[in-house]
Image (cartoon, rainbow, N blue to C red; front, side):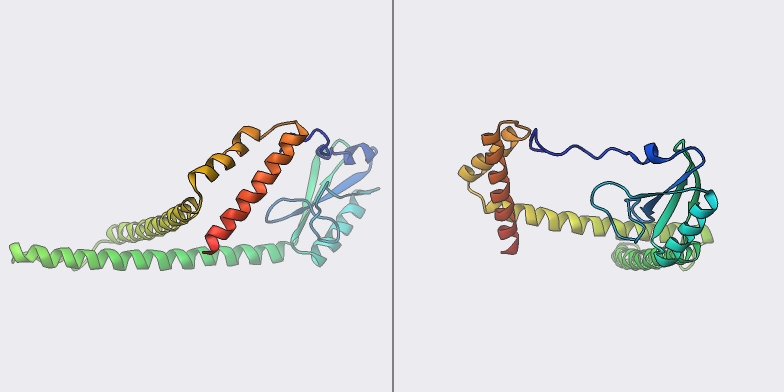
Length: 226
């Protein structure tokens, strides 16, 4: 990222070159992120891990053992051409996880919708109270058709989401002002050198870029702690 010509290249896929006709390769992925894992269920930091089997039966049997031992792993089976021919996973555990996620989304969505509906109802009652000072004959709404309740719930949910986003924006703006006020104009001009040095291939300039970046990040962390 800093233009270092000596940085190691991205790893190249070589697993397909090791698979002969009639053999099958199994690759391992994390079911949540799709990132590579190894047969022991651990994340790998460099290239993907792959196992080659003589028959499809052996590949499926070993994949079943792995997904039973590590439910978060998905095994992808490929033939010698690289085409994916099967996908083995622990469906029972993954289905349970999916149900938990959907129930959680439904629960929190209902809570946010209810909170928004209560807020809108309070605003309505407040506005109705003020309007009745000028229009004494005004009557409140006592019931809604089912489509009205659906729209009311949807509006409540959107209201809660909008309030949540506004809160995040306000907190972020407060932090930005806090960090910005901790820097003087001279310091900002000095740290602006990161923009001009970014991508340089000159070793001396690259070292200067890394030094400025580290110092700037440290200053930001200190400012946020205050």
